[in-house]
Length: 382
Image (cartoon, rainbow, N blue to C red):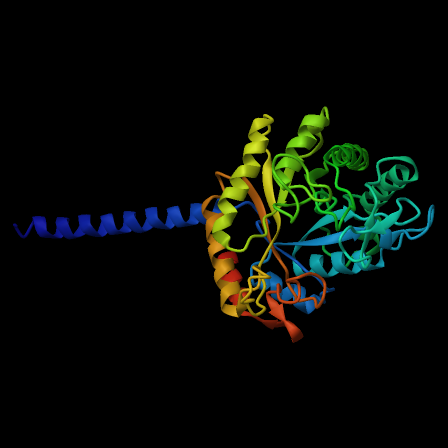
């Protein structure tokens, strides 16, 4: 090698290194940017304060899913709406820089009779049916209209709270786990399709720019099946398929679908999600986005008898989150994933068979191992 050529070789290698760095940086940046805004979400079980919301935001949480329970907001027919609870949560989340995904659900007894959930030992009640007829239908439409008037683009909440950063609610989720008996005593996909049409029309009338997401369907509730609905529970795929088939014009009434793929192991997510997406494709609706509006495992001690496959212990919970989030992130484009919401932020004793350990935080808002894993994916700081 001549003396004249050696510097050129060094410069070439240097430029190659620079270009490689730029290319790799661009690849990583584009990969990070590929995730939709609001992708990383959580679902609280309790009421969080501003400091707790702020910690979530620092950790990378972009969205929080909260219930707008009609039964608690309007207890009497033609009565006033009590927005105190939702006002508080919307205010704290907005101040912390976190977007709110509301799901409207529930029905007061004056609108829809409550009945004991089959198999619950007469200890739990749910609406006998969805609010699609009579006083239930009229009240539901009025409730939706009032919710938009309160929190929509020109909502009274924002004008009454000028100190709160304005983050109007424009995306609304219709009901919760309508295929599972604990949220409507006798799930009915045709009835749910009717509710979606009624709700979509009401939201669009109040806010033409509103986006509608189906209520998260529990992927495989006990007692459901794929060939035909169970007496009280349906598998999500069969429920969605029947809703499409029996509800003319339903495709135009919503923008996204939602799934709650609770499984014993994160590896089971792939077949459940792909089966769900195949239903969309079969009904010529494969372009719709998919929202995972609940997903989680418990940090409670594993059961040796296998009676609770969601209980993994602290390390196991973190491992399941890491595996699930990695899988979902890798397949975000192929599965058209819009958002992923971990259930839950906090533990709630006695709420369900794994709710007492499902939180990213334990008593005293003490972070678990799973929180640190969440933050790694969300790109924040613990």
